[in-house]
Amino acid sequence: MISFFIHRDHAQVASAVWRALQLYLQAIPPKTLNWYVSDEGDFVEFDDKAWERQRQLLLERPWDGTCRLELSESPSEVGGYQFEYYGRKLDSPLWKNPATAVAFTFPTEYLLEHGPDHLRALAFKLAWELPFSFGYASLAVVSPQGSWGNSDWDMLDSLRDRYLGLDLYHLEDTSDVIGTHARSAAWLTFLGQPLLGQLGGIKGLRRALPFPEVSLLPLDSQRLLIALGEWPAVIDIEKEGIPPQYRALALKLEPFRFEEPARWPQRHPYSWLRRISR
Image 1: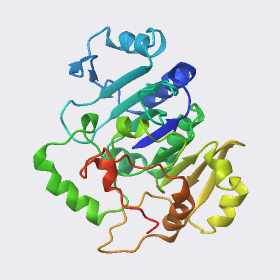
Image 2: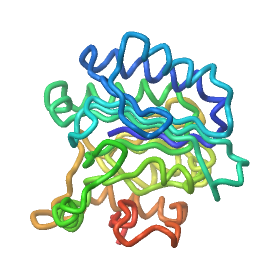
Image 3: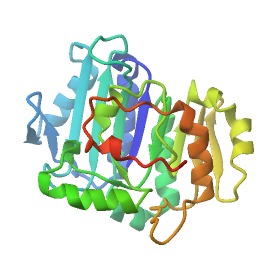
């Protein structure tokens, strides 16, 4: 799963997000995204005119302060291909500290078939289109719209406690509060402004991450991709320790992490995130 948070209004980035979506569609099997979420919040199967409606929604529809676009391979199955976009108006009173957010999901089979170099290169291409402040790519447990049934919680609790490299996310809720802040270290971590400057820039991060597994790949002078290894690490704490490069980056990011709202319940996905820096 590859996610980006963009500290700009929807109107400023809609065209860039549409270009990134076209790159995603070119990379995945044809006619994979067969469902979209309607204005009423229901999954609807694509028909011949659905793609044009999605384009109009993103690029032409009169904007009332938020834009939501959710496309999925399946309306109910966990995993698979999925695209989510939440365009925000940053000065809206509806949110405390919002950011526009977009995520591209791939099944594990895609990574195994194409390899990590291919996925890293694709993530770089997606990032190139987007003026992100923060982004990341990691292994993740994904469900449509980030929703889970009551019977799933015991399984998810077990995954959370054992595998620190697994992300269990809810993009929409996080986009309400992340602003220009960060999450924690991930296999691929994307830093834009102001985060990159706050972390000492590219030179400062090279000094902080002197590990042979780490690659720093500038997109330009204002944006950076940090790759923490060839493959994403699941970090199974029953079998291994936390890789030192993950811990080092997490410690650098710690002062700039977003604060989880008190209103989030104990079992909100983001309240589960174990800080690798600990």
